[in-house]
Image (cartoon, rainbow over all chains, first blue to last red):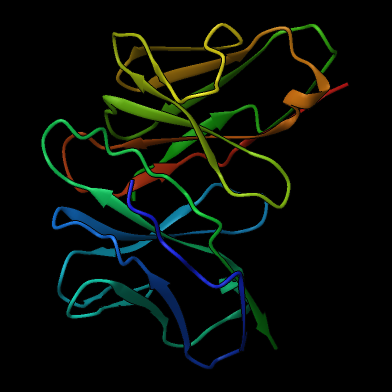
Length: 113
Length: 116
């Protein structure tokens, strides 16, 4: 499975934008970039995913580098409820793929009031 | 979004006993479910892939006879920790994908197992 690299931790101030980076230099052409987050004592929740183009949804935006070797999850206005561990995961798509997710260490985001 | 429910959310058991954890997809059918384990301050570790109507596929290093997985229907998978020991104390999390649509995975709320 292709590996991702994320900073261990980041801090943000409430109501300011947050940019969470992820490096995935060994990404293959069939790998989608997925982001999940895990709040304390809960299961992870889906945030966003993309392949080549930037993506937006109600939770966040995903900016994908042109060479796809890195991506950035953007929270436009951080709130205290966004404090969580954010995981960037590569998931191959295609027939015969089980869809399992392999989690790295993720980035622990602290949001200060 | 789709809902995956785990039960129980917390369980304490005595060493040597077995514990069953249920994972249900409430509003969709899941051909495949996944079981993870998470120790404090660590990331999720995939234990096994649970396939409806067939044997589970275990990750390397996970004892299939200790962690019994049954996926008898498209909405239910169970994980049984047999002969539990204190080192099995952990946070167990299941996930499932809706076989019909989408590519995102949905996770249960997790089960905190404490073996005393």
